Image 1 (spheres, helix red, strand yellow):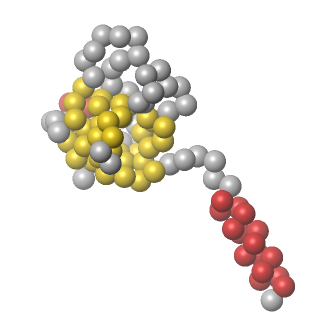
Image 2: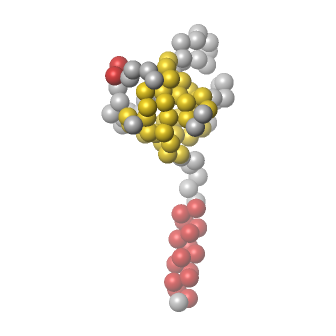
Image 3: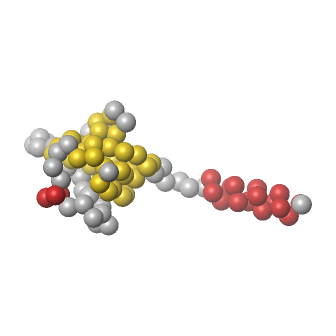
Length: 98
């Protein structure tokens, strides 16, 4: 019993050590950011009622930019970008059509 408690305790610590804040959500790609500023560009996406932007589709994605007709419903894994310029940028790790 003592070993079982130790194993469970160590397992819970290991599982909670994930430092990357990754989410699994549904969203709608609204359109392209066609503004002409230094930090502009990419795609506008609505996630849970909040407007965000991302610059690139992941290389592993089966979606192709030329196939997207706006608005486009998606499922995605994302996190807030570390290199924000306007404060609304996210990094998309995985994305697929809903």
